[in-house]
Length: 370
Image (tube, rainbow, N blue to C red):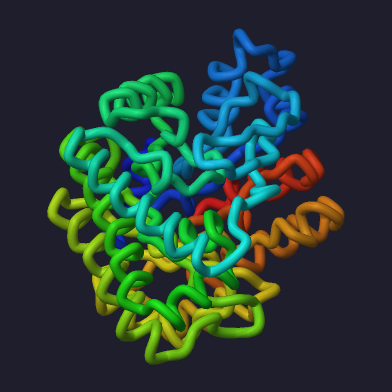
């Protein structure tokens, strides 16, 4: 078969059409890897160019990524008193100025007001951001995100980039307030918790509307927290009555702009997959071996749905050998049936992953011709 370009390869995967090989899909957050494949040392001046070059050389489809233009770890405190440890590729909450449920209630009220005030002003709201260093977190206005996205795409010269990630609410709420405080809020003040959830969803719909018409991508990703490796994190009723309607709003909005939608949810989500597909998800991601998400079973039960991100980055890519990585990557490709599959790590090429292991995975994926 004639060699396909990356964008065509990705779109034909979603369309179920013949391929030359399976597309490679990942995030590259590893400076040593970037320097190895580009042959240049990362500096603040060249970091963006080198990241885009590394992506262009290795991936057909890339999720959000960060630029290593400041490698110093720092602590930041935001306008509301939340404190974060910030690394170039991720962010961790160190302190929340919350000492009682009353504090949570008052903060939620202020967050809801801030979110709708920003939507009215056509700007992004700090209080509704994920605070994990996703693409666009540093920008205040849609035009800034769209310009940066267009610049990255131009520098990647063919690799397709997923639209700015949609996070409907629970990830954001749990990261901002802590999982326990959000659960207490929902138990004691369910109407307020749902009003907050809806405000976060409305902020995401605003973000979708800000990017959707640009035509800079054809693939979107919606990320929501539903499961751990052991099973579902919420009751089936809560998932059905609370999570599903809000996730579907976001899927439907992306579909209005004719995007393919990847539903990203960590953990053992077998009980939810058919529901997500029925809502309109075109792909389920990630397929984590540590959560018993097996490629062979997925392909057998959902032959028409794209599966993605199945090479374990927690243990295998971080601590395994290149031969083990090659074997697991080859196994995933063969178990996929050679169709409707995006090959890549279960999350990202993070700083603890061995460069040789990442290269081994990409080498097998890019050289297995169908």
